Image (cartoon, rainbow, N blue to C red; front, side, top):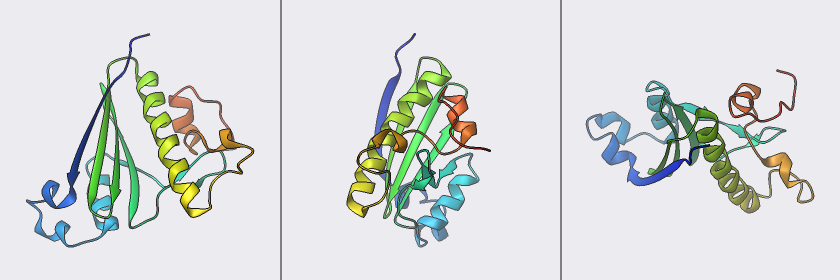
Length: 144
């Protein structure tokens, strides 16, 4: 199995959308709509039971898959952190991306008193969507 390369960049929606003046004045929901048009998927829930991921419109998680990369972008009140996973097989890239989302989700849940019970942390790992779970080789957890 080939290792996955991980690159993280930091930015701002104000720089990213400099050519779109109206996007600079909206909130995270406006930004999210623009990203959806560019092939990004919004990750609204996470884990076996689909706990809230992020805190819309302030914190939003998004995922984009290409033939050679998986990308995760986290919007936090106008600041953007984008991590690109390249190399390896598609499933390996997705697993690396999902593992990082697991860590971020737990961090937010711990501060919001949300997420899986403390005695069952594995229930908070991986995407809620069976389609995404299957793409990364995760076991399916609920009826589609």
